[in-house]
Image (cartoon, rainbow, N blue to C red; front, side, top):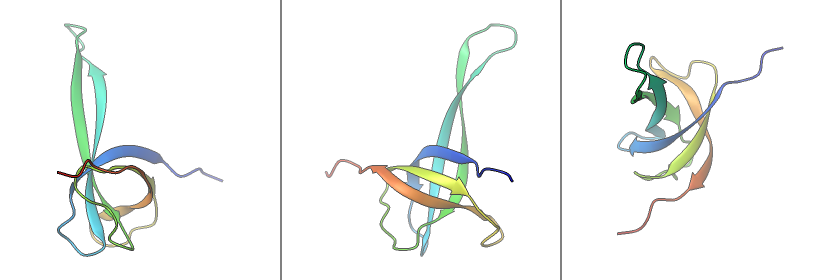
Length: 84
């Protein structure tokens, strides 16, 4: 039995129907200089009710392939983006 991977990130795009793009940041230590460098990965995640907005912090969980590039699902919205 394998547990599903869970990541936390920020929504950077919600232009697609029922799909959001989530940017997940991580810190990686440089091999030679030992300084921490910020790297990121973007994932396409399924958002069934189209609730996510740009800037929201969300938890995404890995799931079966839903389309060619979509393998994640929005589990919950942790923090809503500040209204402008």
